[in-house]
Length: 89
Image (cartoon, rainbow, N blue to C red; front, side, top):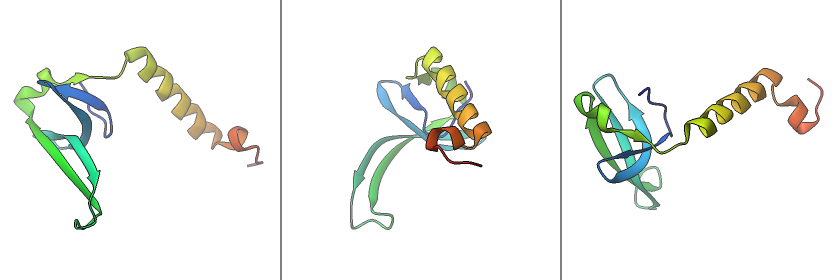
């Protein structure tokens, strides 16, 4: 599985999104709440999954839906969004 930041995944009954990707591990954020006492204003809890366990990480996104989202994003980037906002580019 190729990981992308923000992708919803499940690992051993924990659902969250990929929050960090490294060669040796990824983190899955399973809790994200506002907290004014924190530096960035948010409290996050992340689960570290080392490379040897990546085969247990499952995507929560339907493959068909994921392909459609990639195509939409690609088209938007190619058109620079001009047709969506009605602006001349």
